[in-house]
Image 1 (cartoon, rainbow over the protein chains, first blue to last red):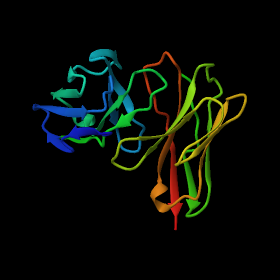
Image 2: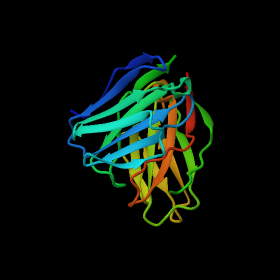
Image 3: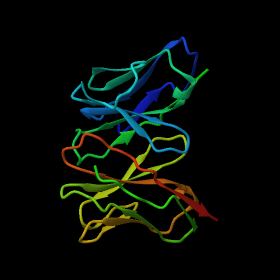
Length: 114
Length: 110
């Protein structure tokens, strides 16, 4: 298995809702990442997990809460989002967090906040 | 993290070779150059990575001159399906971050 699987592919949520995005990989990768991408913009790094521990939070608002239950799973819990949070949320993994390892990205979750 | 500069967009025709140049004047000694490709509504896909001289794989070639202040991604005989955004990144050994620049939008015409 050489894929990163993200679910759901599309999500519409209200500003008072709580929802979660899920990401799964079975490549034995020990680093996992969340990125946010707005239309016609490059992906922006949100969080980095290395060996199941949060190692980087790029000053992301607390309404986004990451979780890494085990080495294969990465969740992003969403609560009280704003319409401007609507974007494509991408999960990625790499063998390790160092420079020598390429990232494998999932196809993303298209989130719309209404 | 070294800042990278790429052309915003490029046009080409099917069957042509496309060269996308990336400038990284302040690249550090231990930085690698990496290129990703992204199709609409998909995640970026790793294409190629190199440190110096030339690297080639089944998809592309990467040319990095001796001063390493720039690099060129070469796509041989492009097809319509190569229409995508191409990102050049410079990443150091101690960096846990993969930071994307603005990228180059390549349009391949019939």
